Structure formats: structure tokens, C-alpha cells
Length: 148
Image 1: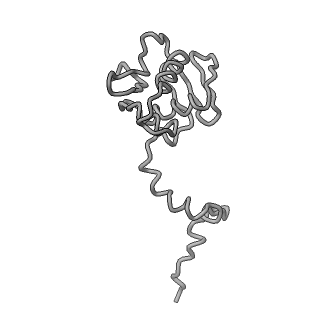
Image 2: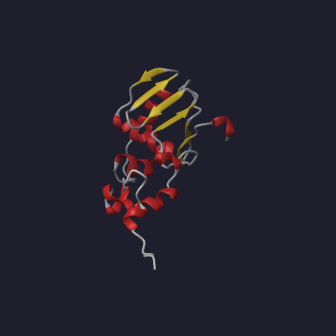
Image 3: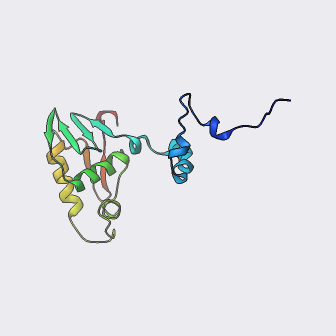
């Protein structure tokens, strides 16, 4: 009678004999099924809106093909907006999630950085289309403002 036991190590190998399970730490393997629940933007390396192209891995940003330099904190703020696109984000949340500060802290940092992002990335910073201030609520990022 033939042996019907399953060789689990062989079951996870491709034709060349390579097995991803052999190289991936158990914690990573355990998280793989949860990747389907992550927002697509968390998995994206690049993002584009209007004339802006952003590569979050290399910190390269271009506006209408011209390179723009952003600081690490500006890139972190931009990524947070991209990951929370269309949602109104209160200043307190930005302070906690981007700056790592208590949300009840009285500071103008989010306002200053919004002004800098608008100046660098908006076609007309005086009339922003992507980085909006929602009075008494916070800020909102729209990648495609004409669709909302």
C-alpha cells in the first residue's frame, strides 16, 4: 500500500526546491493572512495625486516632474494623510500619531507643517485642493478632489 503521509516541508516548496517558510521568521509567517486586511496604501511604495508623485521608500517627491525636497517629518505626515485619505483627522490625532506628542498639547506644529506641505505640493497653496482645513474639526486629504 502506498504511503499517503504528506511531506509538509515539500508542500511549501516550488519546483526549484526553495521554501519561503525556511527563511521567514515564524512571526512574519503568522502575520501573512492578515495582510489582506491592511489598507492598500500601507502596502504601496509609491503614491500619486494631481501632478505629485511620491516614493515613500526612497523619499523622492516630484511635482510636475520637478524634484521637491521634503523632510522626514513632512514625509511621515504626508504618508499619514495618504493612509487616511478622505477622512477628517483632528489636530490632536496628528500630534499623537505623527509627532508622538500628547493630543492636548497646545502647539501650532500641525498648522505649520500643513502650510509647508501646501507650499511644496499644491498648485495654488492659497486655495488648496488636496490638503484641506476643516474648521473646528481638523484636516482632510483628498487625492482626487473632483470626485468628492
